[in-house]
Length: 175
Ligand SMILES: CC(C)(COP(=O)(O)OP(=O)(O)OC[C@H]1O[C@@H](n2cnc3c(N)ncnc32)[C@H](O)[C@@H]1OP(=O)(O)O)[C@@H](O)C(=O)NCCC(=O)NCCS
Image (cartoon, rainbow, N blue to C red; front, side, top):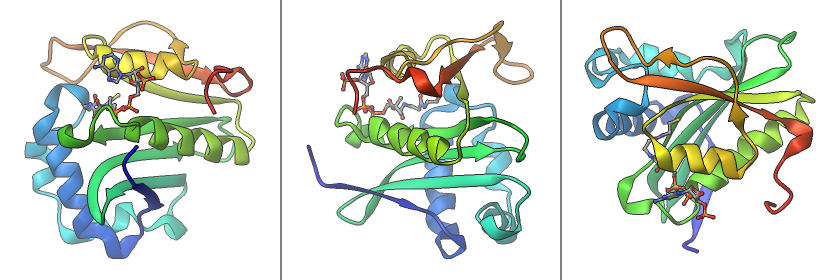
């Protein structure tokens, strides 16, 4: 496997985060509830405040994957409030030239490990039903369909499947 590094983003990374997030929205518009057009207009302060982890109500883990210093992957884990025993995964994306080499798995493993450290019971996400690669990735880690299909976003015909991982039920063939 190539030499990928996973690290947590901080406020100083706002422009790297902006670039990566906008690339993901351009590359994979059917994978996200938000859109390039919407987030392109965000100000510098909005990007930086998303990474201001000390002043958030949520507990958040914004992860970037880098290959030789070049950003190739992004994913967030968020616990929306301390009473919520579920971590939510958002913004998962790997650059097309880095796919199929385990980066998505690595990001997922890090969020699952963080969720375990927080003593949570579940990790949840929503994946577009036609996104077979992502569905297979999540199933390989023990995620199961959880509830009815929902609209990806207003005006889209695409549907997302909520999926949930019970944290004590991680697939045994993964480490
Ligand atoms: C989904 C995505 C994040 C996966 O990233 P990745 O780095 O390519 O994933 P990995 O290399 O870790 O692959 C992990 C698993 O995904 C599944 N997978 C990957 N490529 C696949 C393919 N072409 N067909 C079927 N399953 C595939 C497999 O289960 C694979 O496990 P394996 O390595 O044992 O075969 C990436 O394809 C992506 O960014 N897609 C566009 C954005 C997106 O869909 N985000 C998810 C939003 S919910």
